[in-house]
Amino acid sequence: MLRALPSVLLCVATCWLSARAATAQPEVPLRLEVPLSVALFDIDATPPIGSSLAYSPTRSIVAPLRCKGLVLLSNEAPIVLCAIDWLGIANDGNRLFRERLAAAAGTTPDRVAVHTLHQHDAPWCDFSADALAQTNGATGIIFDSGFAREMLERAVQAVHASLAQSVPISHIGIGSAEVFQVASNRRILGPDGHVKGVRWTATKDPELRAAPEGVIDPQLRSLSLFRNSDRVVTLTYYATHPQSYYGNGDVNPDFPGLARDARQQTTGSTHIHFCGAGGNIGAGKYNDGSPENRAVLAGRVEDAMRRAMDSEQRTSIVASEVHWTLRSVQLPMTQRLDIDQLQKLLEDTARPVKDRIYAAAQLAWMRRCEAGDSIDLTCLRLGPARILHMPGELFVEY
Image (cartoon, rainbow, N blue to C red; front, side, top):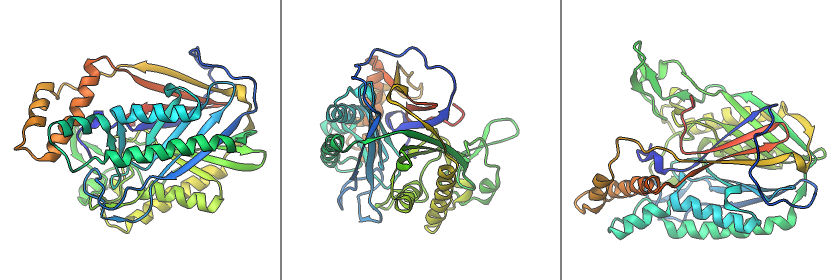
C-alpha cells in the first residue's frame, strides 16, 4: 500500500437508493428535451513491456487493463463516468483527464468522474509529482507519463466517437447481493479499542486471519441501464482493495477486473466496475497471497455480481430524472507531513529514487492544499438511485 495516500486521487464510488428529494442543484447548461441515452466507450489501458508501474517495471501482460466508461445524455449537459484499471490518477493527472474527456463529450470537467480501480500491478499517473521529481533528477521508475498521455488521447477519441453511437435508455435496474469470504477490515482491534495488528491484503499470519471480518460493507450493488428489455450496460460497486498478490510487474486487472470481464463475456453487455469506500478493507482474512487465490476471489465476486444483477428491480426512467450535483470541498492536510522536510528529501540525491518520488507526490498534494485548491464531491441521480463519487481511499466507516 502506498504511504502517500492523500496524493492517490482515485475516485471512490458508492451506490445507494434514496427516496429523499435532491438538494438544490447548481446551475448547469440545459439541453433541449431529448430522450435519455447513453454512449459507451472501452479501450485498452495496458502499458507496454518495460513501462514503469507503481512497484516495478512491466515484465509481462497476464491480462489486459481497460479504460471503460459511459456518457449520459439527458436534459442537462452530458455526464461522463470513466473507470480505469490503474492504481491511481492524481493531481494534474486527474485534472487533465477530466478536462480532456469533458471536451470530447461536450461538457464541463466538473461533470466528469475519473475512477481508478486501484490494482497494484498497474500504472500510477500523477503528472504533478512526475514533473517535480524530474525537475530534481528523480526519474526512471514509478511513473510513465508518456504512456499515460498517449492512453488519454485514445480515450478522448473513443469518447468522441461513442457519441455517434448512443443508445436510447428506457429503464433502470437496481440490485444488490452479499459477497461472501472476500472483504475484511485491515485493522484488528484489541480489547482497549486500539489497533493491535494490521491484516494486509495478503496475510499469512494465522492469528490475524482468524480474527473477525470487522467492519465492512458486504453488499455488492448493481445498476443497469436497459433499452426496453435489452441490457445495455451494468455498473457494479463493491468496497475492497482489489489485490490478491502483486509487485513483480505482471500486469493484470486482479480479481475484481477478472470478475467484471467474466460477467461481460457471459451477458454480452458492457460491464463497468467501481470500487467503494475500501481504504481499510482488503481480502487479507481470506487470502494468504497464493497465486491460485486470485481465481477463487474473482469467482466469489463474479457470483455476487450475477446474483445482484438477477435481483434487479426495473423501473422506467426519462431524461428529466437524471441530475448531477456537485460540492467543492477543501480537505485538511495531515499533521504528519512537513513541506520543508519533503522538499529536502526530494532534493537529496543520496536517498533512493523511490523515496524521492513518493516525497514529490506528497509535496504536490500539500502545495495544492496550501493554495486552497478544492476537491469535487459529485452525486449522480438516476431515478431512484444515487451514485456518490469521492476522492482517495475512504475508510468504510466514513
